[in-house]
Length: 290
Image (cartoon, rainbow, N blue to C red):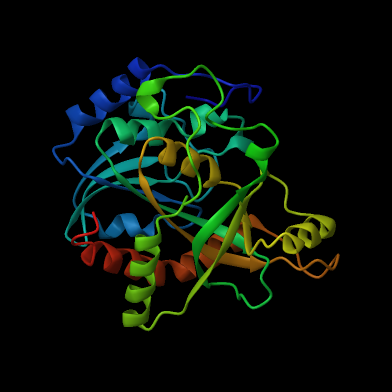
C-alpha cells in the first residue's frame, strides 16, 4: 500500500482487520500473545527472534508499508525470551502521507490475532537536560499533541467490537510492566530513565520555541510515532509498555545542534544491544504478569 496523496481519514471495517489477520494466520504457525513494534534503527531485536517466520508487510492486505530508512517493513513471529512474540520490524508514520487509521491498522490486526500485551519502541529527541544520547527512557505517560488537535486514530464511525467509544487513558502505560522494567534494568546494571513522551506529527524537527514550550509543559522526550498506537492499543484492552532510545538532545538555543535522521539511526543502532537485553529480560521475567 502506497501512502495516499493526502492524510485524510480512512475508516476500516472489522472485515478488513480480519482479512489481514487471516493472511497472517495462514502464513505463521505461532500463536503469540505479545506484540512488539520496533522503531527507527531498532530492528536489531528481530535478529534475536528464534523459530522466526517472516512475512513482508506488502503481503498483508491493507498493511501500510514504511518508506523511511531504518524501518524494514517485515512481520516476524517466533520466540524471544521464552515467549511467543509477533514483531513489527518497522512502522509507518503519519508524516509519510498515511492516515492515522492506516498507521494504527497493524495494532488492530494484532488485537484480532489475540495479542494482549504490546511493547512499543522508538527513537526520540531528549528534552530533559539530564538525558544523554543513547539513554533508554521508560515512557511513564504521553502527550499526544496531534490527537489534542483532532488527529486521532479513534475518529470515525463507532465500532463497538474494537472497544469503548471513549476509552480511558488514565494509565496509558501499564504500571506493573513499568515496575518490572525497572527491576530488570537494575539487575542488568542498565541505567533506565523514565519520563513523559510527546508525539508530534512531523516530519520536521522542532524549532527552539517548540522546544522551550515542550519543556515548560513537562515533556522529557519527543518523537513522531507511538502516541496513536497507544490510543488504539488501550481502546482494545491491550497492556502497553513503551521504551524510547534518546537519539539526540534538543537544545532550545538556535544553532546549538544539527538534527539529522542519519545520526538518529546511528545512535539508535549503538543503543540497540542494551535495549534488546532489556526487552528480552522483561519477557523472561513476565511469568505471572502476562
